[in-house]
Image 1 (tube, rainbow, N blue to C red):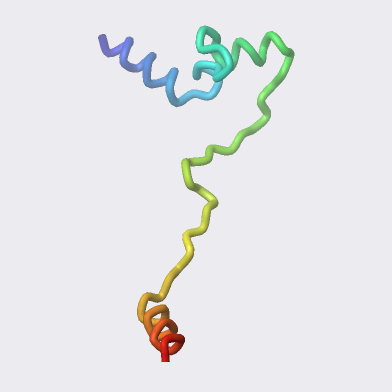
Image 2: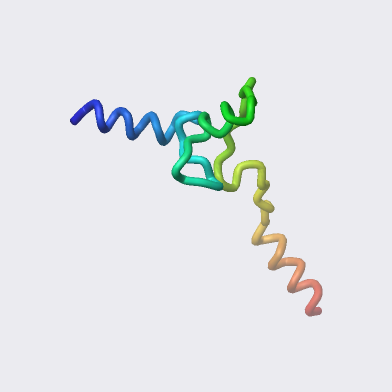
Length: 70
């Protein structure tokens, strides 16, 4: 039971053991091996990473709106 849970966890977090996006029946490692490709390195990105959120100053925005309405 523990072994199955560990195997499932490793399949989710290990790049070469993850399901291939284009064909869920194959693992990424199987596809790379069939194509003769080696992974030398990779970078993990999270959703939204690298997107800078615009910093807003609410007080300055209100002051600018009031100044524009005068």
